[in-house]
Length: 170
Image 1 (cartoon, rainbow, N blue to C red):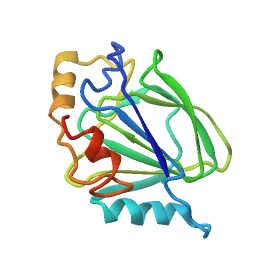
Image 2: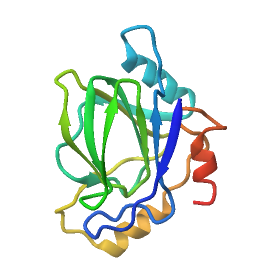
Image 3: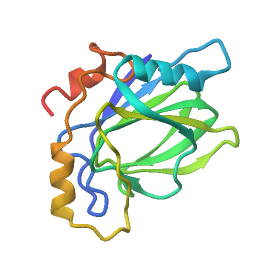
Image 4: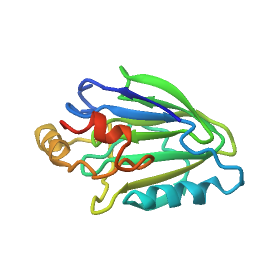
């Protein structure tokens, strides 16, 4: 597995996160079996991440102001716009994962027909969904984002993962 971090500046309608970078994991899950969705669910749960779901990804810019989110690509591929319009587009393939800090925008640009995404959140965090075009109190949203607790474990690598390295000072 290889990981990289990507900070995003405030994009106005997408606040992003002022302190925590997004973490991209390439080949986070190398599974010989065909049930990668269950494997991602077990992996996330083993590191204290729950509330899992299986689906695709929304085709509109949105973010969560009350929770961090991890997305694992169980099958297929997807091109995602991260950080709002001025951010970056990346392709995620089967086995890849992305740790999205509270406030960081994400949107599906295109995907393969067999796309299955598994999402999860740190235990105790409840996600909201705010679209880029929603009318919100920007100051209140940014305050909520800053107050979201840093999880104790990285959703992929546990206590020694990149979350602990790159989010420690968050």
